[in-house]
Length: 479
Image (cartoon, rainbow, N blue to C red; front, side, top):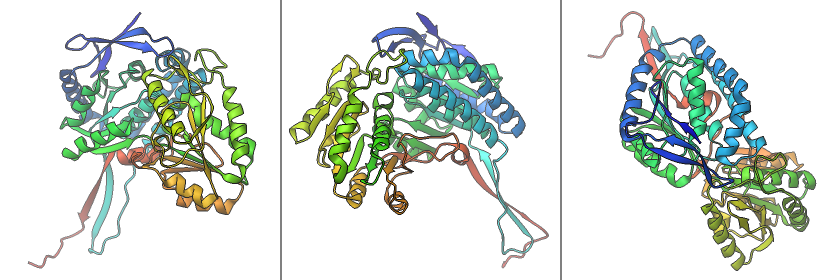
């Protein structure tokens, strides 16, 4: 069984207490690695190292940061044959998902490299004679990132590379269910020549995250995960006026209007909900269909869903692998039981073997049902009927979440109207709710989060805007 140390201030450590945790393969339920875990004292040491290293790093020119990040991308590309199997084994994703994570992370590092030369301020017109007024962007200092289990490599990589590009130091707390993904990133940055102290990766339980949020020398928290945890982080961070970028859940709607291409809409919806077993914050877990095509859509969608292969994620034709935690199956069971008791109809699935949950389709879902409002975070498609586009919009917005939404229609005017009316941070016309690129403003509204990640939007979040003036000659004062 492989044994992993963690990365603390430029050194590989077994931790002050030497504790280890088992890393489980969700497909087998068996441990495949042992990972040393950090303690509160390790957090203090990592922050101290980050503060010290950050003094020099914030003064480095863009060419050095750019070169380092491009080297990170090259190392990822070279090592992807090694990284992909580890991601499959650790998180239960299939090959396509793992390959996407690595490919996206490569492009994210290259995108971050490009941002190094675009940290620009601006001059501001002034009514004061002889006054030059301008702004500059400066690094925050120490940024802590808390990454989730579902796509752990890409979501950690995207946080680290933008922080480093902006001149900050970074401490990553990976999910306790997927710590190796973060450790791999530390290996890559070390190989690329990142100065010691600028990056630490501290595996452990939620206490490590709490310690990072509360530490007075940590200037910002970037978090991806559940809404419950995100809310607690936001409250704790506010006590010390830390900046936050928080991306949480989303019971995301995909609206299917009667004028759409039905086959394409079905294919899009299948991908949007069953990708990575539905363990995606952007998953289309509410599919809202105009009633004129509701029966046809339900039939065609269910036929596609039952054909999806469930099983070993290492096999190339597997679409649905295991959920990261078998306990989630019991949670989904309870949602379905309640919905069916309240009038919903189960069209396919609804059962599981260990952590493997079948592709499940349940129709006639209404806003009063718990499953309409609450994330399943599993392969469960909720089909909802709407009289027309206006009711579909109302149903889509009837949620505490506001992450990603999609609309399937051939009518440009309707599409533009829906895009304006949807209360979501991201809206996609004739495409999946699951979309992201390294340079776009990724993030949501309401209980889906605050702030944006990606490209210069991350740089804006991870820097402080400073106003500077220079007076030519001397100012005159009233007294």
